[in-house]
Image (cartoon, rainbow, N blue to C red; front, side, top):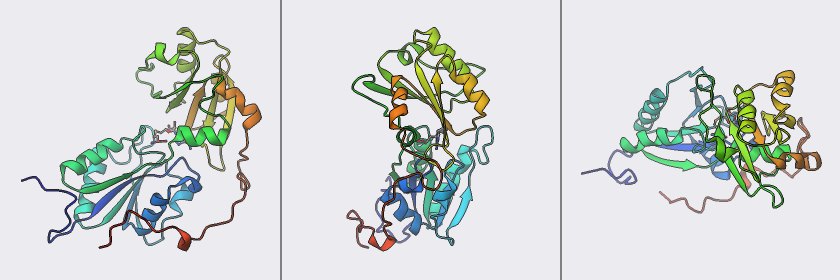
Length: 283
Ligand code: SAH
């Protein structure tokens, strides 16, 4: 008979895994649930996209395991990460799997919980603010706008053998915004491809490095100019590319000042003031 992973009444109550989105960098963008789980986990597995400011919110006693995942530098292969999650949960631990942005947006979160599901390990997924949303807000670029963008596409711009496997006609449609993850290396191919498929070379476009953090940098230009501007500025990953007329709005809406005083001031909320989790089942 298949075991029900949510039945904790058995003699050997096992551990559990929380697959949690850590947002794009600014720790203030964590969800309440992510923050709460960070305070109660036994062990945290994280990769390079989880910002230092977020990790600093883990209690010092929490065991931390870095599982890497920089481009071409996979510290731990995906199968090993999946296996480790299962093993730690089976030791009875409360495991926090922290991932940059949202676990289900270009994060292979589905693969990780697939293994957990197959092994009967209890798990929960906590969404996070994906890079596109966080970065666009902090760059002052609304992703949709009644006047110029009625749709928004998220795509990955991973280069494979020097080319990009993208649905070019769909990306080159008018009146939409295209957000490209993992596209820095392929930026020249991307810009040229969009123009070849019908977008004007004057279409506004931006690259945002380390969005929402103190180190955020933004370069804006057009499909014609962006690749060389970005090369001159020597931007480094992680970067997000935003293409479309909405980029022009940044001239007026750019509010975030990277650095200590980047955001407007809000009175701090102490941890004790966090509302009680209404979904928690008393045990
Ligand atoms: N799950 C993540 C995306 C993982 S793919 C999410 O939902 O955001 C990794 C890519 O995300 C990077 O190559 C980059 O394109 C983008 N990215 C993540 N954080 C970023 C940040 N702070 N600034 C700019 N781009 C970021």
